Image 1 (tube, rainbow, N blue to C red):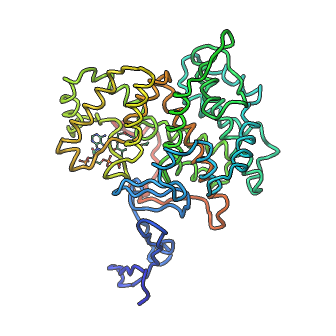
Image 2 (spheres, rainbow, N blue to C red):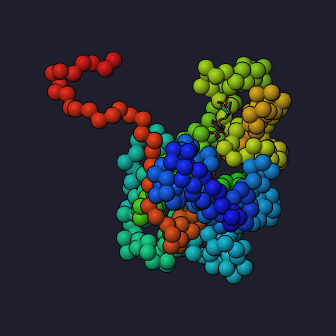
Image 3 (cartoon, rainbow, N blue to C red):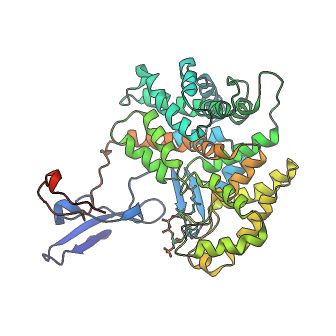
Length: 434
Ligand code: ACO
């Protein structure tokens, strides 16, 4: 019998089918069940895709038990210490670290596309002054597709490449504009003599009325956070980008779909929710009350920033951010009682039987909000910051998928548990449901 197959015996019919097992370069193998339906006439049922590999990918690898995260093979710890966000974006997109010249060229191209069309700026005026910045991001990023008709033939490699770069380049401009609109201040144009993070900070915080200088500590920390958030294999938002893209939808629409998925509190919205939770707790004395609530099956409350679908040991990004948090608060001379509260909450939760047995550890978002707060980024912009950084991963996955000749429309099936066929009832004969 050939190795690397899984034999399934259908107890209903006695039929035996062998399914190939694919081995990746690292990580768990995957059973190829593409022929399951044609062979056995049944589907697999896996809510939340807990045991399902949706694609082959060369971009990012996670070992959830060992707490390992690799971008194109490079450990996140090394990239966080030595690299820059744009270099990491290049790595994710092209698969290799750039040479000096390549990085220079990439930087120049990103700069060339950093402005947004003047007409697009008017879109912001359609939003109410207190619109959530993520609501604006979804709308404005999606609407980019209305501006680049001539380079939107996704069958052409060059059109795909230029769309990916436009998204990466314009995201800081759009994100800062969302903020400026929400505080009623004039938009600031990008400055191509500034680095990616410096440029974003300048667009966020400078005003035409007075000079502004980017604090290098702030830019350095932002660079770190963007690297840590740049990609995370087939998470919910990246899978959403891939799903939307499988229909042939344009890249701007696909990334807008990813932004919408990221917004949820179970995903990128968690960083905003963590700070709200810490503010609600307010005092270390109240931590036991919140721990008890998190453990109570009848209470929907969860400790935000705790737990992860893949990491069952620790989230390596959380370890890096936790250390950075100490440094940043010190360097910016920022005493934040919420950080002390977070440390205490982490300590108590990590010693608690419930969190130990369920392998619930702080994730990347447990500390990122505290750092963003120290950088004066308002709470409702936290998830926007995540979206900005994750755009690098989204476009890398989009490009990878588009280049895959085996790519088909993503069309899952279902286990139907509704009513059997029945006849239409005229309205006068119906009885109220409730
Ligand atoms: N607080 C309390 N209990 C929790 C928590 C938490 N934060 N997270 C999981 N649990 C419990 C669940 O109640 C469940 O218990 P049960 O087995 O008794 O039913 C068990 O742990 C497993 O949880 P699931 O929800 O099944 O795990 P899943 O992998 O589907 O969800 C998720 C992972 C969404 C991250 C979850 O841990 C959570 O809601 N965390 C809080 C939100 C958060 O921080 N999200 C950010 C994720 S990281 C990111 O997107 C960047």
